[in-house]
Image (cartoon, rainbow, N blue to C red; front, side):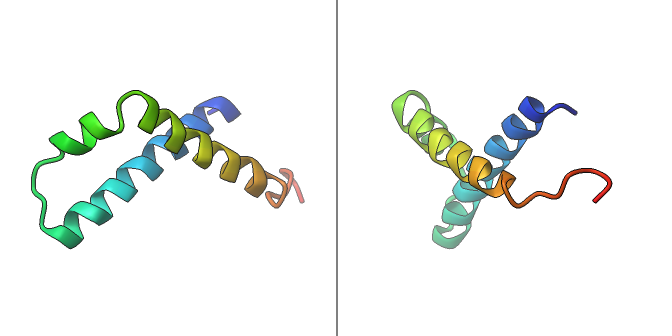
Length: 66
């Protein structure tokens, strides 16, 4: 898996985890609203924030073989 694929997977997993946490806490059993809420600009904003976090974490990831 290349770095872009890793980033995309991490971003999608982060969004799913965030939505799942909210839905579980509030007893929401239908993810339809989350899907609508995070389409468009809201989803782009969330993904941009997570990508910035991933970039900041990447400075702490050891190189292979270290």
